[in-house]
Length: 189
Image (tube, rainbow, N blue to C red; front, side, top):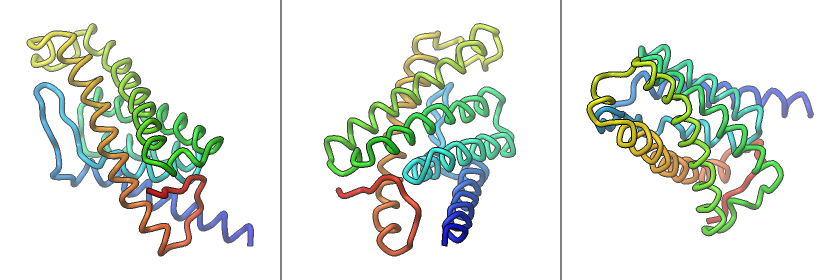
């Protein structure tokens, strides 16, 4: 029985990783707020993986970063995607310790906002060396550091993260009712 659970977890992880890879490659849902851009739903597979386990979350975050690399995004965008490992691991460890975090609207919003802050700070920290190394597009410099890096990347990522988190929850709840999935967190909203 344990071998079947392990195989089941591995297959689900691989499927989520495949989704994380393919979204940046084929997604038509890109929002561009010059100079930054956001690929909607690009975090959904990572959030669903976070609901399952820390190892699944990290695996899917790595796969998602590979998707941005394979899609030919600039290296700064690929590195922003690689920074998702930080919020994915942190968020999944929190859910492992406190799986009830997603059971009420209030705790779910607080959890989502906290993870989004970690997400936004991680992406800003990745972008800063590129910005000050003069390795960004001219649009970043035209808008200035605060607007381009802090507001568009940092605050924009917080909003983007929270939107994708709620998309993941909307998918997770009905799927777990109809398919047996390994999980560390349940959504009761």
